[in-house]
Length: 340
Image (cartoon, rainbow, N blue to C red; front, side, top):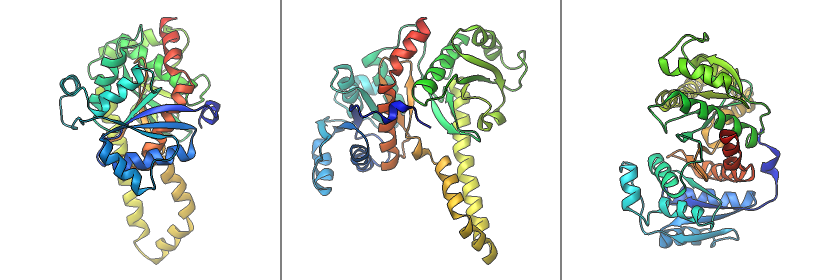
């Protein structure tokens, strides 16, 4: 459940990398149109003005709340992030980040290269004072609600202090943006005992336990992530990305197996028909498009990274997440927690 801030009528201006994503710019335009229809936001579509203009023309023209900011380049998914960002200064992702830096927008959304989104955010805005490394936080469904897993791929090699900051940033995000009171923060490990695991997690454990302002509940194992045992699960980016991709794959397999079972015979088809409302609700909880995008926490600006295959619904929800992050003052809140 989102915080009350998400229902505020305050308008927020968001720049979108319109050329980023597997199906851009079509799906980005679709998502922007949904967003300005449903939310109090103004959207700046950053990209090729000719393509974007043609797409909007097919929808009857740009409605109130949408404008185009031309960018002559786009960064390919396979390009080296830092080199590409430095070389292509007029790319849609770099220009979107620049608009935030200049105050022309309050947040940025991209479904393009994750590395390029990170590089653009870091180079344009820098890190929050006291934060050693930024982290990608991914919201996942649990039996009791939602859990924020971080880092989901930004930092492969971590130090114990990095994991501590991940815990602080994750706790702050869940409280300020997701409306979770006193979020339970856990460390991902191969056992619950404090003495188990790698040197990294063993050294991080006491530091998390002693850090003021977070509700640290100890270690959790992989099987506990989706049980709702914790609201924030901390790990390094290598482990987090593997967990995330495995969970996405497992959800797809389970749903495919369920569809096959329902089609098996007349009785199962009848049962599937009767369960259709419940199955639809279950799919909604598992559907990544409902969550929109993952926040890049630790940078001095709001940057939401969406799945490369995002459709219009996912882009719309990424814009919603960006808006809620701005209204929740997530950057200022993290800064005060880390510095305090």
